[in-house]
Image (cartoon, rainbow, N blue to C red; front, top):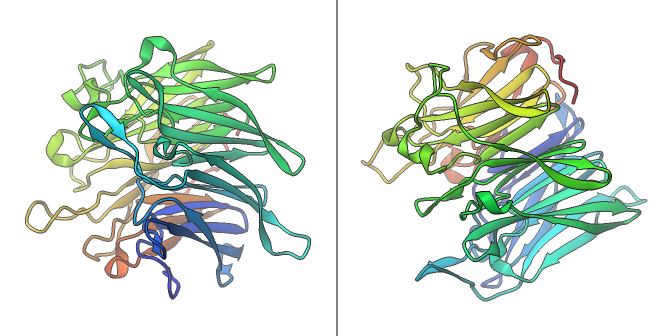
Length: 413
């Protein structure tokens, strides 16, 4: 277990990203220095899975004052990216009101010749309420930044910015928005995942305000990103048969809070609180004969006391990890869910099945175990930002021990 380092902001472990030899951890609670400014502190752990060195702290300034709705974090090929999106706007008479302050910022970090971390690129967007950087995805020489609150039409929010690496620079390539037939305030770019030439972006909607839109898959063809599919829930939980979704799903709310892609398979999370119907679900889509089709809908066993199932996802060939984590409500309204992480395995061409008992969070009140998950080799890292009295912690597990099975399937990553 990794406890919050001395001096770290509260809610350590709310956001994670990892690859072999590198784990990046940060918080969604900002350090308070000069109001209304704050900074995001990213802690970098290096070493083998069983022997992580003491972390290096890197501070990045942001335009937010206390807490943001999302901090984007991604790691790939020895470099890492953090998005500090500033504060999201407030709705006043149907319009989004912009708080004063500097714009949103995304920074790319790489090793210097001396082996120290340095900021190699800064991407700034002056329109602060766009939440530019709320989600980021990095793969090779491609960087995608979500701006889920950027107004792309009179009634729609959400856009994606695509950058390509050109030597030491990251050059803007494209701006992707929802096609006209599906617009409606979906907040496209709230969640992102990138696998080679395919990109998946969630549009879960604005909590308690506006329903979302379909999750969208883009593909790079001839150097340009084109829309490849619109994903909507179409199979009922548990039954596996077509169904009329509950009211929250019919409006599209929460569908796309989390997304993951591996080859021709996409997972989309739609977590909901238990008192609003189902506790959440994860839909699996596959690209078959040139079309994206719903293949399965996953929910935890009915006996498991979890809520917010689908909060975070990890997908690779033959392995799917799904977390269930929900912040506690004020005392007396509803008991806290301990949080859990479920592991699913599949054989080529077969359904996804539970690979063992779930990982259940420590019995700390309000630990929010499973708020974030990240995988590096055989190691699974689980964030619990409410643990240790709200200081936060990260738990480490062995995937082969907890969810045994092959790590490679028919779909290549």
